[in-house]
Length: 360
Image (cartoon, rainbow, N blue to C red; front, side):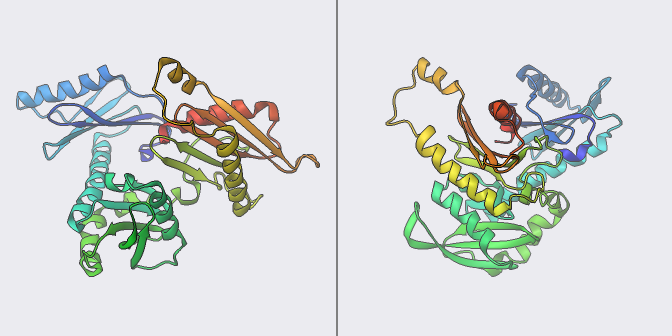
């Protein structure tokens, strides 16, 4: 969605074609994710006018208001994609092309998984999972963490067939981890049993599903080290961050948000890892047992909790600041420069957590 320019707001909606039930909604402003979402009444109206036209055998493909362009497109009588853009001078053709690319990416991952005969497929950029099938997201925590790490640690190869044991799912019987290089630093990963053979996937099946999507996939590559969309507003004091979604068991992590040189990425990674261990074991330990979810417990979960750590205070301007903030199901850890004032750490963490929420 960032390709639609830097001057307007873009809303992307995906709905079930038959029922109109929203499947997902995404918004961006100036190329960066935005928290602003369209009200359900507006989504219902946009889908309703499209379905009304279909019932009269009229195909509504686009419309313009004073400051917004809207494009509708249905695919296989299964889903309807709607995009709204307030960018000045945006063309309906460009927005329709965006919808085609969005659907192509959605279809490619699930279609490739079905053709390969496995429910476990992911798209990995520099050792980070940027898209995956529902089966892959349901993997146990050890597998979900270790498999991308393994892929990121291996030397570059066009294709691999690697035996792996799954600590949670299959600790005694090996599975096969197949990897296929789509672009440099971008790989498809499949977790499967005895079949399919690697020669069945590469190169024929790979080219069939992914060749048409090479251009939009290239846009994923800059996400590798930074792990954030281009133009995402991030405070210049931030040297590294870890955002956890405790229910989804997913995270967003980077030690190279702005390309600074000091401290080194290895040092930042170690500092964040040690701070995570401290925070998890001491300040935000898991609640014992599984108490019933009362109204008081719900409100308690919505109250933010925070802690911070200052290192290297012997010399002015040296060391780092570390702050952790938990609000609801999200926990954010920040590594900050020594110039960041201690009294502003919580405010900075709160602002950053709100900015990152649409991403996870």
